[in-house]
Length: 233
Image 1 (cartoon, one colour):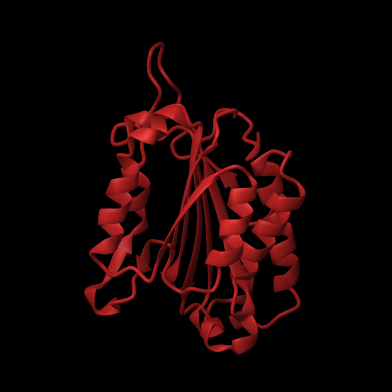
Image 2 (cartoon, helix red, strand yellow):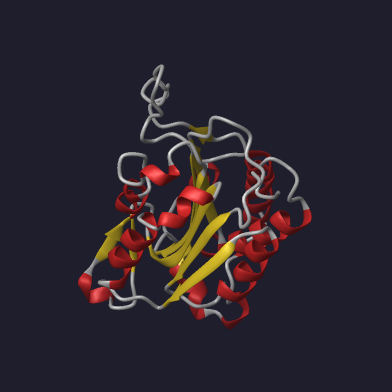
């Protein structure tokens, strides 16, 4: 990637513990970082639609979105929780090729941290996704034709869930997942993102083996990248 900036990095943080260091990290990588703190139910879709239709995407080589909230593997909860959750699938769909043509053929990267009630999961569930659990959505469908790129191509979807009780502990103000991600991106920015993420997963699950169930982080990755992606010029 060669554009300056490399693209827009949108950070939507409903918790408020991670924005500062994430902003520093992605700025250092060459991104134009925009932050949205403590959005309400109306803010989320409005903000995502706004950023999905930005004309600047035509001049940039990629797009990053970081979401931090209460929720689960399917939805995120905003500040006014009484209004219900916002579907993560909807977030993804807004930036697919048919909805966001200016990002066709360009990597669209999502890092998601959701806090949910998962303390009752069995011990084995912490190993549900291991260091090699990288899957593609419908691999036959994403194979491009002679003159087209599939709408789901070039998406990197990293999702982490953790027990919501961690937000009540003063010693665990920041996400272990996002802190380690930020550190690896700063220190090893010239390496492919998929490789970094595999090592990140190994590190997170090694930590899981040493802590109680409610302190564990459950991390998964799906991607449809067609080329190696390095988040740096």
